[in-house]
Length: 613
Image (cartoon, rainbow, N blue to C red; front, side):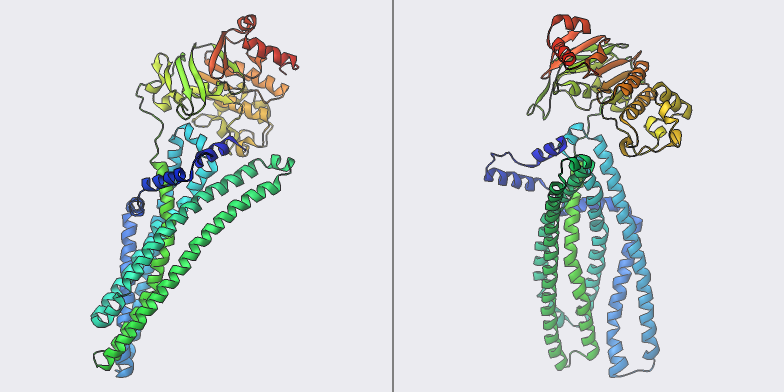
């Protein structure tokens, strides 16, 4: 199981010893802190408000559409009285032309409504996707330790789709069918108040049903969206580690885990559909009761000569037009419930605290003097493992500082503090005498080039990966590739610098990926260079090429080297030896060997095991 999986699992479940009441209290507190559905939906509609011209056209279309439908119902009276009960010759032409005109008008209005709502809805989805991705990229790195990346992608893809249905499709149904109900109800009142009152008695029951169904949809939809993230996470893990899955014969296990999650999504979706079907059936039953009451009262009015055949047809047609609109408005609760639950998840990201970027000290190119002064760091802010414990040292320009120690001793945590991926709990880190927090993040990170064991390459061309984030001429890109010993394999590629390298450089070897990362660092030309076990996973020949490239990159820079193979840092200006977050030893390679401490012990172990090769 990956670290992200373990972290997200731990973050998402209570401790094993938590009592049922404590869990219930936590759930109640979470529910209480969640904004109401209306507050969330109103905020969501605020994103659609910027497209008010489209929404205005769509609203006008819906008014015309509902008005045309009501006008057609109004025609039932002259159609019945003047066309059949007491026929008038002129109606043979007037009524058909009126019907054609109404449906032509309604067709144009429907197109305007559909286009306006679809365009504004899809625009809201685009805006939210851009905002959420931008927000993710501005969140502290600690957020990525507690939430798996596939869950984040699920929010970007699945949750935003639910939002467009709530902000466009559902809004269209609410407005269009709401206007239809309003116009037809007004026509019924105009025709006969007494008959219409029979329907009003059913309205409160329908309102209670809609309120209950809306709350249930929202609760189920939260579970669906959470499960979709888990489903994407499970699939991503299985596919990314497909070779390990195959070699361990774990296909059935991964299939079973995925099937369990897929079945949970199925069950939750069926709860939504069952609720929708039951509520739709209940609305139809209530509407049928209202229709029966109307028929009973209308017949009584007709017998008393207070209702003619045309008015009776008007009332029946209006009621039959109201029933499907009522059913659609009830069913739209499922769409709104999913959209509100998705919007809550998206807004929780947009409202999250970003990286602290309040620094205002300008810096074009730093000299590169780094000073760690009594720096401590613990993950989860003191509630978790201590990563660094009161560390102090200075790394000067033009020198190489090697950082060594056992696995988990704090080496990587140390270098993560330089570009401020994490913030220290206490102590101070300065660059050229200025605290790191006083620099703008973009300016600070422009001073740092990072080459790690796991190289981050993108599904793009060789040139685009070398010049990532930089506008650089082609000559500079080639010069950087040559300096990194990468040109010898680039020129053999089918399209040279324009050759696509696949996802994360899948079409290249490990050594080739490392040399592209070094070429990127050379082109970046930053005064601080961080090498995080850059050659640990390479064969001897690739390591020699990479080390040769690094020797060209390191002069005149402040270089921090996290090293596993101690033979690669024998010429470092200073070596920092860490153990359990504490800086135990500090000195040159020769000095530390003479001390006979932890460094000498680690060095001796490597050579007893056959050397560093």
